[in-house]
Image (cartoon, rainbow, N blue to C red; front, side):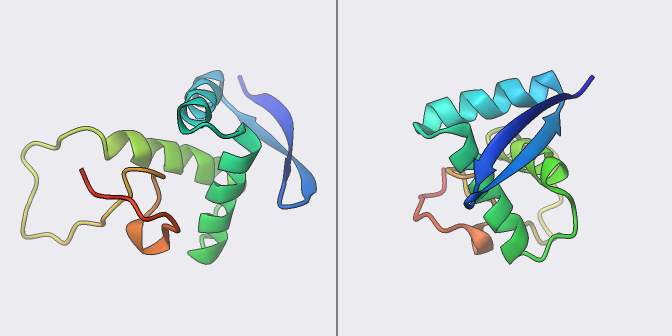
Amino acid sequence: MLIKKSLSISGHRTSLALEPEFWAVLEQTALTEGKPVARLVAQIDKSREESNEKSGLASAVRVWLFHRKASQVPRQGTNHSAPQKQWCYKCGTLSEFCDTTSERE
């Protein structure tokens, strides 16, 4: 079941429909970072636009949350010869699109 919430991002109102589990993780992440959910969603939206991602905002939020969690889990059995994308551990976006100056863990 999707839960739809209204947010104001980048100066305009929008609605976002996510599963309760994604809302919980999104809200916890915003709390951890000390920012409103709307600001975090706006940052995700900005990263999506800068990367020319063709997905919708809800999909972008889900993928962002997935990558944020995945970047915190050590990977075993990784093929080290394959090029790996670098994710910012602070904001959860691809490092090439990150606008924060975070150190890699």
